Length: 363
Image (cartoon, rainbow, N blue to C red; front, side, top):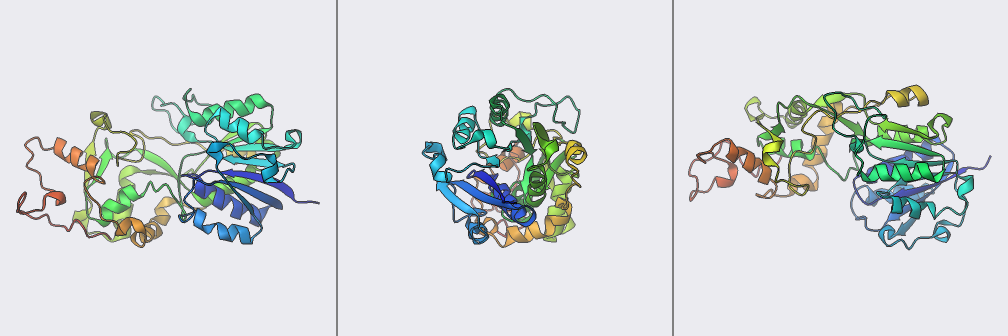
C-alpha cells in the first residue's frame, strides 16, 4: 500500500517545536510522506528550526514560503493530492481559506487537523479542568479557524494544546522561574501561588496529535491536548530552586494581585500563566482515541530544564531593569516608603548596604 501523503503548515513561533516533534513521531510510527511548508519568517538559526537538517535527512520535503504574503500555491507543494493536512499556522478565517486553496483535490482529503489552542476557553467560575464543550472567547483567533473549518465541509480534527515545554522550545515559559532561581532573586507569584497549571512536554503533544491522524474516532472532533498532571505555581518555583541547588534561604517569593498592575501588557516580563488555575481535561482523548496519557512530567524534567537554561543563551545574558520591570514594581508596592533594597540599587551612590546575593551570578 502506498504511503499516505501529509501536508504540514508550520508557523514561525511558539508552536514551532510541535511541528518538529510531530515529524519525528510520524516518521517513526506511520507510513507517511511529509511535505512541510515552513513560514520563512522563522529564525532558522534558532531552535527548533536549526534542527530541520535531521528531518530532511529522513525524507521530509521542506518548502520555505512567506506565508504572510500568500504567494504559495498548489504547484509549490507539488500539485498533488494530500490525504492529511496538519495546519500549525492559521490564526484567522483568511489563513484557513488560504491553506485550503493549496489543496489540488480537496475532495480526497481524509482529515484537516488544526493545531488550535486551549487559550480560547472563557474564564470559568471556579470549575476546572476545562472540557472541550466549555464556553470559548468569541474573538479568539484559533476559534475563528475552527469555525471556518467546520463550515467548509472538510473532515476536521481540532487539537487544543496549552503550555508546552521541551528541548527545542522557543517560547520558554519556565525561564521565569529558572532565571530567578539561578540568580537568587525572589520569584513573584500571583495571589496565593497555589493555583495549578498544565505543562506538557512537546513529545507528548506530538504523540497525541500523531495518534489522532487517520483515527476514525477523531473525525469532526475537538480534543484538549495536554498533560493530565497539574502543578502549582509555588511548586514550580520550589522545583527550580531544587534543580539549581539553592540554599533554603534563597527560595523566596513575592505574592501580588495582578489586577493591581493592569497597565502591564504582553510585552512586559510579567508572570507567564493565568491569575487563576487554568487546566484542561484530556479524558476525551483517552476515551475516544485510546491515548495512554503523557509519558513526561515537568516535575521529573526540572533538572534537565535547569541544565538547559544554565548552558544556553538565557543564563549568559545579563539582566537589566527591563527584565525585572514588573518585579521592581511589585517590590515597590510593598514598601511605600521606598526603603527597600534590591540588587539594582547596590551602588554606593544609591544604597551602600549590599544585598546578600550577587545579582549577576547566573546559575
